[in-house]
Image (cartoon, rainbow, N blue to C red):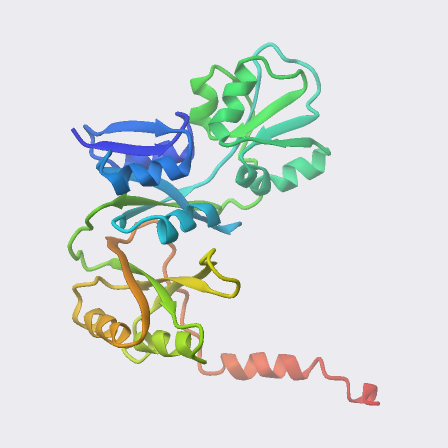
Length: 304
């Protein structure tokens, strides 16, 4: 039986992503900290793990990205799951007092900011949305609620008072599956790298990125994180379309490896069908229209 670790407790969006990404007979193991989840794969304690990777409103999750970039050598991204994020307001079953505060994970609070502001609610951060429900069920203060996915509140016997509280109905969180090997090509794949160019060479990052652009390989993510060694030194997370075994990407990687610096393969994986596709290409007159709009904001009469 495959063992898959994830950030617990049960009832979180992460658990739902783990259920979607794991085999039907997999053993799901909740853990209390993301470093423990990632290191369980790195050490071979579990076969795989699932961690939140980025959010459509808040961007990448720095701590989780740092774990993969800086604290592993063998972990690879082997899959992804994009989950729509929807929040329910849960209350204790016997609490009929007016609502004056809510607790949730920081991302949950951010995604429900309009609901919170409109009602002038106090907020309290928790380590997970499920923990907010767990604490509320264990005897939370009167007048307080929890913002969480439906699964979390129902798991703890809470009363659903309102739903669809997120600011943007398109809000989504992307989770990644970590393994020590990644799958073969499917025809709709993405590949990730960690690049650490030499800091004493001007334009070194640009030259690395040109290996992709000259081969018409679309980059879908570029994120920088400090190495935590010396001030001003960064490692870059690069993600592109294609599989490491594809001929065009192979040529790009060979180009990367010719430069001084560090290039680390972080995995090739099938793109989730829920991942947003590329936008429509700009028409031939779009750039001119945009430039004309800029010019319209120039007031010649305001010249000194």
